[in-house]
Image 1 (tube, rainbow, N blue to C red):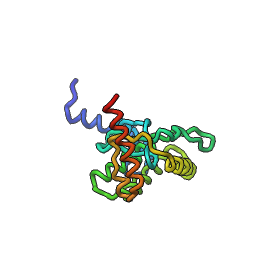
Image 2: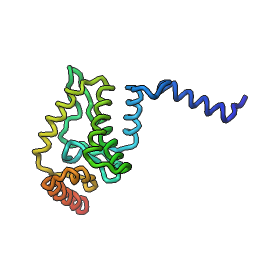
Image 3: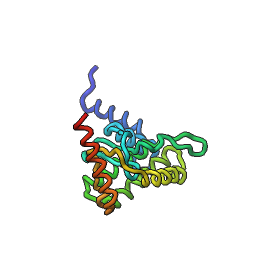
Length: 184
């Protein structure tokens, strides 16, 4: 017996709803995990560069960059926690808000930070301890000399912060990286 098109669409829809949950208007750790996984499937991660502020993204948003010196894991309450997925979520949300809604960096960053915090909580991780780990590494990276910068790093966040010294360092390192790519 063959199902009608309408019935099979209904069956597929109800199957999806059961998997995600019946009320998608409530705050849901499961929904957030699904959203993070969807973002992870749509972006490429690159950890081979020096990235100011720990993480950034390419101009087209297709690549998320995480600083090569940032450890992939942190230890929180005896638990080993991977940090990449949270930073990828933050950067993807921030980039979308900048590009699609034209927000200023600080506004987009604050919203992305809240999304990152929600994902950290959804993973059962204490935000204060996670944030403490990140703040330690932001300071370390902030004092490091930028040697390797991706040529397609979106510089809007640094421009919006009016950090001219950092912009000069990024430009210098990026030009070196571009020259290395051209002359193998």
